[in-house]
Amino acid sequence: MLPRSAWLDARTRRAQPPPRYDDRVVAVFVHHTDTPNDYDCADTPAVIRTLYTGQTGSRDWDDIGYQFLVDRCGTVYEGRAGGVDRAVTGAHTQGFNHRTTGIAAIGTFTAGVPVPRAMTEAIAALAAWKLGPSGADPRGTVRLTSTNSLSRYAAGTTATLHVVAGHREGYRTTCPGAALSALLPEIREEAARLQGRAPTDTR
Image 1 (tube, rainbow, N blue to C red):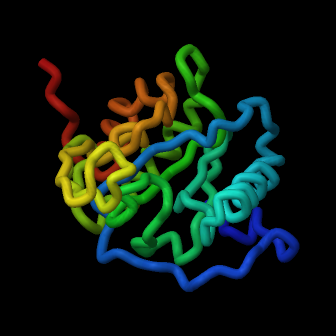
Image 2: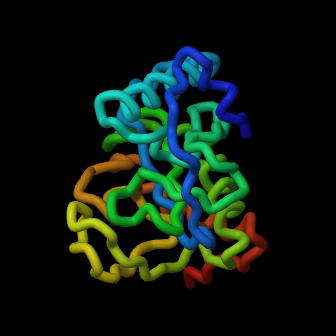
């Protein structure tokens, strides 16, 4: 896992308020960045800088929204500031940013687009690690209360979502794309295995 300093330089960094925190992480939202897939992994820091500039510039966010980003080679980058081992409040899934972590797959994974195995393995490992302290089973569901009516659910509504969910479960979007969404069951099983849980009985 590479720190923010691997992609954020003094010229790009903007002033921002202190990080906000939740008490724990009980769910993970998987995203794609809707950017080109043909990048060289050596260029990933530049790709993340561009995302950061867009989110903190034209969108006027206080920081990049995702807590983590994963490139096609399976390298994990720290995204939002606050500490990778803490429950940093993100800005990745409107209405469901509390007690959740956003993991962004760098690329566009619409139907028929290959998703690199290294990427899905890294997402699974990261999900297993972030959910570990709360004891959440990556294959399970969780009840979360929406804080924003621009999400799929009116503010105050409690929704039952996957513990490892696609962005589209909480917001009206196609993210993380049909190809990556189709691999979420596999990612959940791998994350559970990495946590030492017994495999799902499919008989």
